[in-house]
Image 1: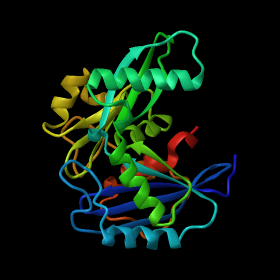
Image 2 (image 1 turned 180 degrees about the horizontal axis):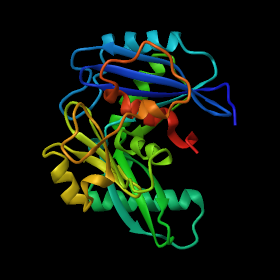
Image 3 (image 1 turned 60 degrees about the vertical axis):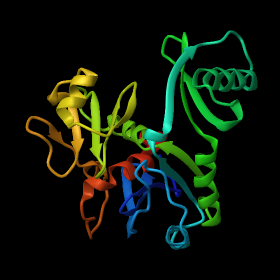
Image 4 (image 1 turned 45 degrees about the vertical axis):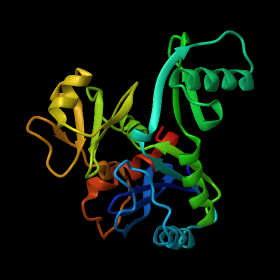
Length: 262
């Protein structure tokens, strides 16, 4: 399948903005361009994006370089999301199911329903729903910034969730993908994803009951026994210059592949 649309991933990190644009061709994926815009404290210690004038100008500069046909996925911090599992309701229409999910999640978190935004999907057995929720105001702050910068076709995806795109390319024995973003470990398995602020890969392996050989690790130097992952290798067509600290672009690449990897 070929497409003229640029599939983009945007990851705003504490030290700046990293973005990748890909295009799907019949034989694979082509790198169109990558960007790194250095910024001081682009996010706070919780990973939330600072809506500063400097960041706004950076995003406006990025938008000016893009063709009309593009789709952007922007990373939202997984540590600012709330995940839980709730029973699958009976036969409800989509709007009723959404209302049920919102009310149930808000009640469990002791928060007003109007303060949450949520997304959900059924498990394989269709007996429960996996729910991801975030504070409405925090999501609104990001979308407002994007719209001020001129973006109109975009979607927000938790940064750790973006790593699930790598399973399409990885060997069958790989059960987990982890990325160190300079502040924390982001991780994903086939069924779960999240972040870990403290502890290294050994701690994460113990928590998720995975062995070192089952991981792909995107970081400067993986611990002994863990396989290094360079997601740029899965591009069929790339061109110089290469990005510095390529592993720091892992989330942006995962976002760009998104649901299109298959």
